[in-house]
Every structure is written in structure tokens, then in C-alpha cells.
Image 1 (cartoon, helix red, strand yellow):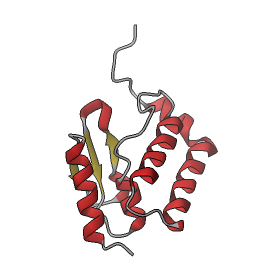
Image 2: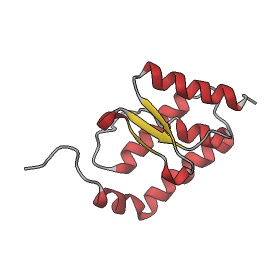
Image 3: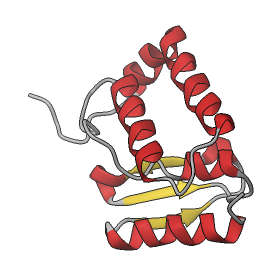
Image 4: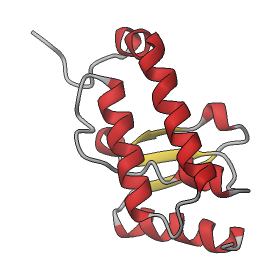
Length: 120
């Protein structure tokens, strides 16, 4: 198993190399990623491979998509491809997250999303 300090260092290194500001919050439900809009992510402390996987939502293809499930899918793909290790627990977390969005939550998130660029 990879030490937690190595996972933290890895996320910090990825953020530095992609010029993404990294901020810490206390609770996982306060985490968010906005690398394209304002070049920053806010994540809960990394204490396990699961919180490490969530923190790896740094980049991904199609992050400008209006559909959050598309952004989420590609953020998980990026996390998996860039992780130091990808465990079954991390895979279950990713699958559960995508399932949550697919079960109807994506429509609510998309409806509440404010466009970053004014629409005419």
C-alpha cells in the first residue's frame, strides 16, 4: 500500500505541474473541482485511497461539457490513469459516484449549474 504522505505529495505535485490551486476543506461533501473555470480544486484531507481518488479529480477531457455526468466520467478516467495505484475500493467509489449521477442526480446538478459564460 502506498503511504498517505505519498498520495498527498502526488496530488500536490500534479496540481503544481498543471498550475492548479489546491485548497483543503474539512469535509468530503465540501470538495469541488473547477480547473477550467478558475484553475483550482478544493478537497478534503487525503486519509485513504478513496479520498486520494476523489482528490485526483484535477483534470479530464470534456470538462467544459454542460452535462455533469460527462465531466464526472472523464474526471474519474483522468484520476484512474494518473493515480499511483488504482485499487478495487477506488474503482467501487468511482462506480458509485457515476451511478449516483446516472440515477437522476445529474439532471438536478445540471439544472442548478450556472453557466460561466453568459448566454445570449
